[in-house]
Image (cartoon, rainbow, N blue to C red; front, top):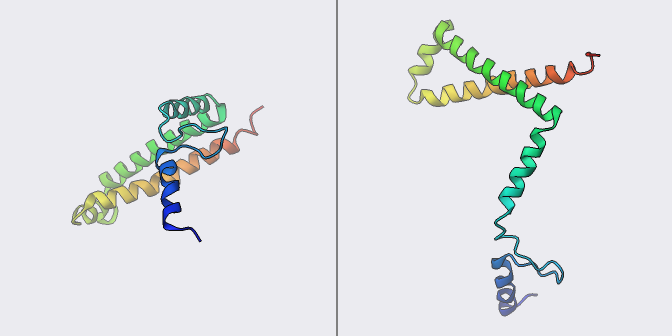
Length: 121
């Protein structure tokens, strides 16, 4: 069982982020270059053709979702627009509807792009 004094003996190492390993005695919590390395890795993945294909088709799905939401609000089927805007918080209803449309149409566009890769020769 760990005593009261030994629990606080470890605390300074934990607070500073210093490793207790003898060869890896570096500061990981205060590493200023970590966000830059993460950004560079993310930019490297954007150069991958498959990742780019997925991002482009996700953007197409998001655009289709926004257009569909605009069309639903413009056409007002079964008084949907009136029902949404009669609520106390119409932004919540619009946000949930838009999120559902983005998930549905974005994944459909991405899946269609992936499945059509094998057909082109």
